[in-house]
Image 1: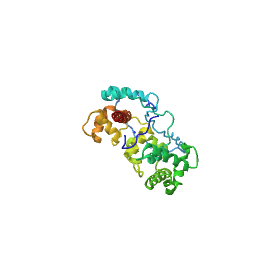
Image 2: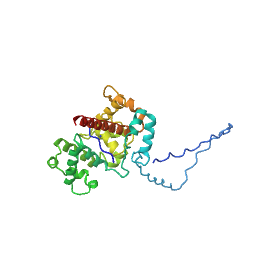
Image 3: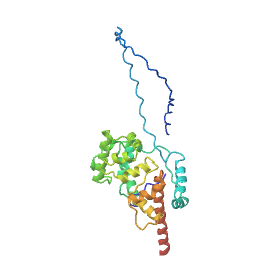
Image 4: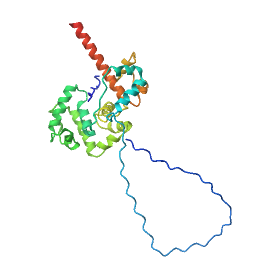
Amino acid sequence: MMGRPVRSRSPATVPPPASTELRSTKISFRSRKIVKAPPAKPLATTAAPPPAAAAAAPLLPPVLPALSVPGEVAAALRHLQAADPLLSAVIASTEAPTFAASPSLPAFHSLARSILYQQLATSAADAIYARFLALLPTASAAAAVTPAAVLALAAGDLRTIGVSGRKASYLHDLATRFAAGELSDSAVSAMDEPALLAELTKVKGVGEWTVHMFMIFSLHRPDVLPCGDLGVRKGVQELYKLKALPKPEEMAALCERWRPYRSVGAWYMWRLMASKGAAAKKKKGNVSS
């Protein structure tokens, strides 16, 4: 399972219905005299009741592509290696990413966790998250984090475990929107990127970066480019030897060749910068000794 990047620090498709073949038939027409007939008298019969409406089939959410589907990461690597020789070299020297094939956390739980981890070092965030789970009434982490459970926690309860008052308000706003039905786990999982950005950024404390991280690491969407992530921007700068950090529009143009696997390309940018940082640290250590 791959690690989650720290913000600003580094990180079935149902076949279409068969078309009905229409065959044009030539119909001969001869003009003939039309005789008007007197209107027919209505039949004295009891009208049959209209047929009952057929029960509408339930609408199933669309099945969206995911990197956790077997073979999807391999397909991504083949595409990226063929599309970008510079990225191909990074792929060849780096262990391939893995995404859990088992179901990930429900959307609400994942988003609440994202809020807790914002702008914190991983070790500090891990500790706060563990204490957050301990506040909840059940020991099962997957079942414990629900809107009702979070709303039952006062801001003071959250502050005692290291959650700021502002983050506590973010968690309560998220829980309120889920409890009111504005958002749901199933609806969020079925949304595409524009819809997710539009709906989730209405939640206090949830911005574009948080939505992009949620899409990549919780929903495992294959084609997300987090243009605002500093680590990815630095990776693109390093990969293409740019003089300055690329702006979002430049990022979009440079990484267009990675479609439809920009999430995997972004993952390699994090790894590229991590390896560069490790090499620099090692070099510094050798010089000091």
